Length: 225
Ligand code: NAD
Image 1 (cartoon, helix red, strand yellow):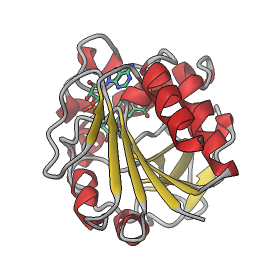
Image 2: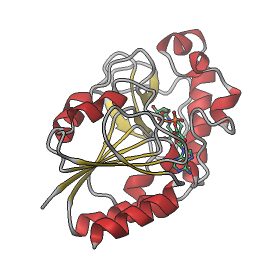
Image 3: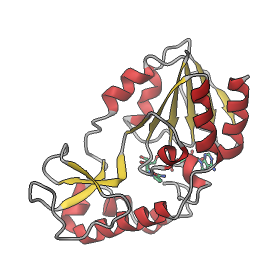
């Protein structure tokens, strides 16, 4: 079976009603990144940071996977598919994708503030000040904040280096090291990008300039023929 690696970003979840990072229409717009997505911000005002992610988690549980998430599941009938996502939502899993690697953490998990490997499932529950991890430290969201290491980048790079086909969906490719994963994909692999806006890539790609629901449906139909 040929191997497909799908690299997704906030844009694939936009049509599920989850706002992207840079498109000026959502939750992120009301906050400065430095106030909610760095460890310094958390040290300064943990309650505010917890509240921000509690709001994102509630938004996630009122959202549903869209046609783009669902179409990617179809690819598993013909290909070995691994989704490498920058998203912290669980819409790929809820759509039914079997192999999803999260680069930037998951809203449905929390962790110890001192031991990044001490992770617990919280589902749709809020995290409050005073909620403790098993090691007695304050629970924090299992999110990779700006400036923190990305533990899944190495497995992701290994997955990319075995790809026969790469599909990039809804990411501005502005956040590193995630954006650098494309350079691990073998030069002979076919690459497709689905995004309504121009995305700069340093390699030859087939560009489907469309929203994810339409663009991914079109591409999956083509790949399933
Ligand atoms: P980004 O906001 O930088 O880029 C979003 C991209 O999606 C843009 O290129 C935009 O043109 C495109 N887009 C917008 N609407 C689309 C649609 N309907 N269909 C397809 N594409 C569409 O997002 P990023 O590159 O993922 O990087 C932002 C960071 O923010 C990531 O690290 C991610 O962890 C985080 N984030 C995650 C979520 C989520 O989990 N759903 C949401 C917002 C931000």
